[in-house]
Image (spheres, rainbow, N blue to C red):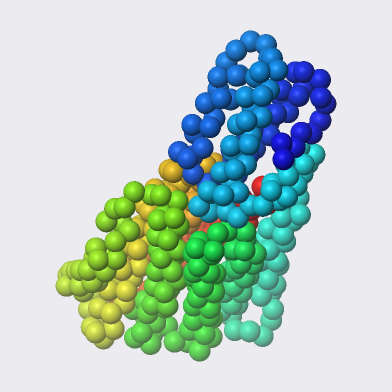
Amino acid sequence: MGVMQGPTSGSSMFESKIEVLVYLASLASNTAAIDPMLDAIRLVTSRSGTTQQDLKILQKTQQQLEDYLIHHDPVRVFTPEELEQKIREHMLTGHFSKLRRALYGVLAVMVVILVGAMAIPGIGDISQRSQLGSWLALLTLSAGAIGFYWTARHNFKPELQPAYTLLCVSSLVLGLSQTQLPIVSYWNLEQAPLFRYGGVSTPTFIAIVCVFLAVRRYAKIVGVPSSPLMSLKVIGPAWIGIAALAVVLPHSSRPENEALFDFSMAVMSANLFTLVLNAMLTRKVAGVSTKIYALPMHLLAASQMTAAIGLTLFLVFLFAKGSLFGATFGILAIPFMVSNVIWLWTSYSFKRATEY
């Protein structure tokens, strides 16, 4: 391989070769694995002037990076022809206009649906229409995320593809779970015990656990050191313990149905614990990843922590008031909308990593 683009004069050739090497290094998923290969670049660039020997050193480094990407990278699948094509495209363009248009398209559709639903007459009052619009907007975000995750999936190693399938499942469950909100609002089920005490958050536990299993698998493949955060033998009892603690904690309100209140508190507390766990584990993965893979991991952590903030507010409100529905429900739901937008951005960043 050893593709070169651009001028072939001495300094220009040297600069082009360095740019190719930096680009190839950015495609790797594990920083530690390729760092020794980059010593040659550091050595050559630390000297003044360039020689033919320097170019030979850089050519050898390029061959090492290409060999690592094709045969040893734990995350991505590359072929020699694909790498050559990527280098050519990078040197000629270096942008992702088509992918960006897809992202902006999803966001535009979300806004149009949200505003359009609120403007439709004859569907309840403004509160009910806003909840319908919010659900349709969240469903649009989930559909966009599924599209990005699924189309990125085939570019990764077979052992990693199930992680992206789990992220798709998480997006689907999260989107469908939002159908409860317009149903509850339209049929005035706010006082039904299950919904009143936060049962709407129950299906999201599946979505959050799917994220945990996906990140856990990713962490093992990219070489994150084993820790209690990744052990189901530790996490399983922790889920049970936190759910039990939420049930026995005293609360100021007197719920009409203590059993359903306790059930909702247990599920929401387990959700909160898992969201924080996901954020912590994701940051560990980002710590061993190169920039292009670290970015979506940081975004995923931000999505989980934003949702955790919203869920914390829900728990505090539920403890104090004994009910989630009311005038403040829409305000409390804002962090979840923000979290879903970040979730879409995360899926776009994973897809972008495969197009880089």
